[in-house]
Length: 124
Image (cartoon, rainbow, N blue to C red; front, side):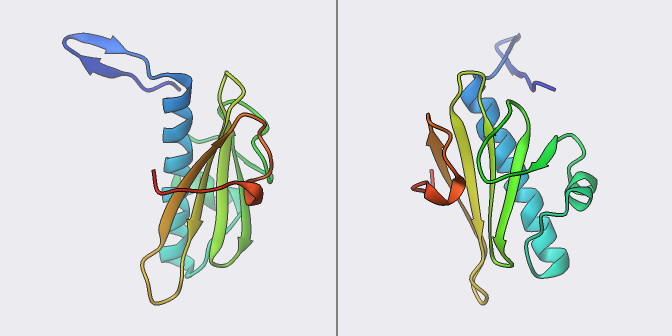
């Protein structure tokens, strides 16, 4: 499902990059809900689907398909969500929690769609 924005009475379809960024941001937020519930991140696709049923979920360490969010949980406190744009750009979110501090999300993009752990993430 492509979300559309209204601008001056007309609908605007977001760019493939914007749509992919939203998708991984929403996936990372779903992981924050899991963190609240379980006190850890999870790659349980059934649980993630209950939290965000509009997101197509899969397991993987790199973007593999347009519109599908691959999730990889490296540990209870570190994980990644990623997808691929129609232009072949990998869009990534890293979600991390240091106990005693608020969790945070950082982002990366990669035209080669390499594995998530190899990315340079920023707070964009």
